[in-house]
Image (cartoon, rainbow, N blue to C red; front, side, top):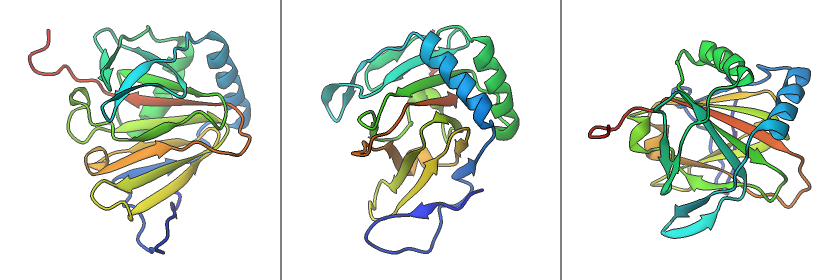
Length: 208
């Protein structure tokens, strides 16, 4: 696991435990990453959705698409995502990610960050459909973006890691319950990035 860089006003020496985060750089090389990214940007039916965050409806500052098995629909911030069928490219990537994660995923959320203005605010992936202590695999293609993590009860405990082209970040343990994460906006001129977050969607009790 690559060492996480700690940021914030207070210098800390404790790293985030590996049972919560694993960073795997370069699981796809530059040529593979470029080919996948070009394919996704051109062919995915991207949408800019309206979601509810902190009691307000906002337009997501990035484009998204949801793929997965039949029945792996997902509700996030008041918006329901119905899965598109897997493509051959996504299945190829999924198999490689599953080998590293040791998890069989049934869905993936694609995020398209067009420039430094696109972002995702502080949040946790703690919806009921994801179950207790979910494993989420986040794969990055294109522009490196900083991934920030902070503890929910103490915002002074903060960490960051640059998600490089072709890299995989595994979020696991109780990270989604006790921590939150973001990709912040940047004033620097940034290029395009496509991020894939593989998940396991469980049928919530009472649903049919």
